[in-house]
Length: 120
Image (tube, rainbow, N blue to C red; front, side, top):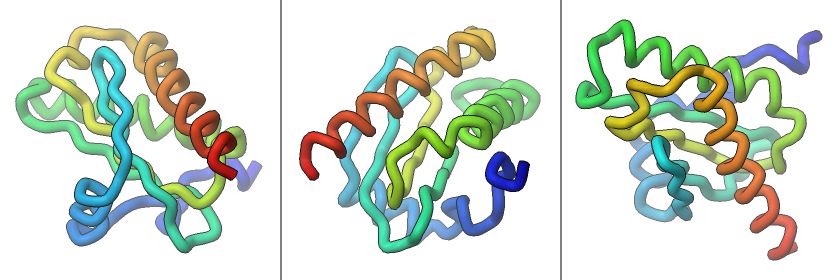
């Protein structure tokens, strides 16, 4: 069960990490999300979530962040290793349900995994 937890070392925490990811990372666009990713020197994936105030009030923003964290926590063993990932919610994300959020993030992460496998 411990592999399904979401530990501190699996999170992007510092603004320096977010800035480096934005500057040097690759982007993947989905209808309601943008995913920025790049390889890291860690042993595991690290996740950052960005939901701006344009998405809605704090309740809506926190709901989206909870759903994304839960998806990552449950599916991180399926992801390619050693990636920093920042998931940015677009303004349109406020009106979709949790199942659709999971589907969109799944499509993004699968395409990231496929592009990483092709390069190796």
